[in-house]
Image (tube, rainbow, N blue to C red; front, side, top):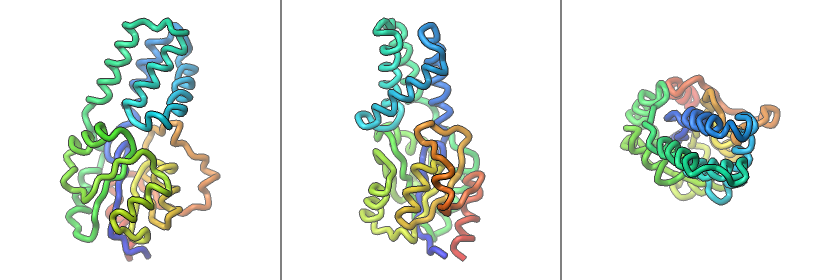
Length: 236
């Protein structure tokens, strides 16, 4: 059994709601531009633009806003009105200023583990530095975390860099998150423990074919409320 000493949490859709905000925003934009393209097709175009722009803008709301504007220009053949562009910008600002809403069981879980004394707690989340720092600060949980790592990608190289920088042995590390692609697969590949906490909505870019991970072994719980008990079980 692993001697777990360091527990990391993903931010978006693990500690606080995120994809619901993106989904509602996308719905507003597809409705706004419905005269130019069917909403379902517009969503496909937006996803393609977002994916292509990841190498330039990275993840997060600001990248999403820029991709929304680019998509609006493309689907209207450059005829999108300044009024519509302003509305897209205003909707984007609302995203950035949206209240941080913790998921059920998050506060109790993090406080329980912080008070336990056996664990160091981290946040490892990807996205825009300023926005993610703001979310951590507004979550009310910041003082409970030992370290906060905001990264451009969550892959094997990133996790190894974090392990090395903080002197963490992968066998003593567990990652808790909602994404199989970002929080489970690369963590298992470095020999650490992964705890999957599914979220009802998953961004298409984060989808993973279940058959490709069928042989991997990770732990899954219904909510963060179950994490402390799972960690106790893993230490036995």
